[in-house]
Length: 235
Image 1 (cartoon, rainbow, N blue to C red):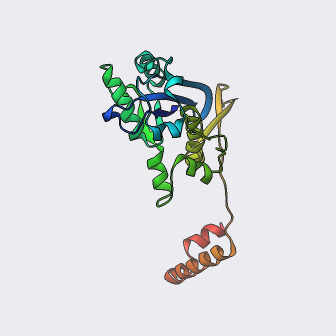
Image 2: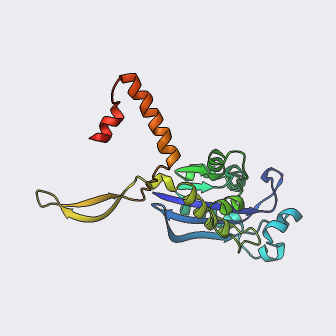
Image 3: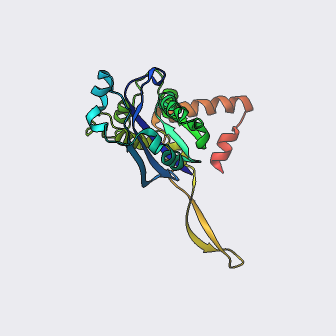
C-alpha cells in the first residue's frame, strides 16, 4: 500500500482571495514504512506573503523570486502522487489551495489524481475529543520530537506527520499477517510463512480480577451451577 504525507505552505489563508502555494512537500510510505522518496518544491507565487503567514513560514519574496511557478511543477507533483492514498493534516486547507492552483492551469481537482485522501485532523478529533489536535500537540502526545521546528516548513511537517500518523494508527497492524520467510508444504512446494506481530497482552490487575469474579458469580447463580466461562477456564 502506497501512502503519501502531504503538506503545503502558502502566502495566506484564502486561495479565493488570491493567496498562493509557495511550498509543497510529499513523503512516501510503502506498507507503512518510509521509503526515503519525497517530493519537495518551493514555488514563486508572484505576490508577497501576508505578514502573519510570513511569520509562520519565513519564506520571503526575495527567496522565492527565482523559484519555479506552480505551473512548472504541477505535472511532476501529480505524477508523484498518482494512485496513492494522500494523508494530510487539516486536508480542506491544503486541498483548497491545490485545487485553486490546478484550476488556474485548466487541470482537474487534486482528488482525481489520487486513490483517496485521509485527514489526520479528523482522525485525531475522533481519538482525542475535546483536546488540542494540532500537529505540534500530537507530537507532544505521542512523544515525537519537534524541537527542531522553529518555523513551519512543508517537508519537515510532512515528515512529522508521517511519524504522527504511524503512532495514531499503530493498532491497525497489530493483528496483521507479516510475511517473513519461505517453507515447503506437504507437496514440497515453496510457500510463505505468516506470523502475527505486535500483539501486546496486558494482565488484569487485582481490581479487574475481582470485578470479573463478581460477574462470574452472578452468571453461576443464573444457571444454578458453573457458567460457561468457568467451564472454558477449567478446560
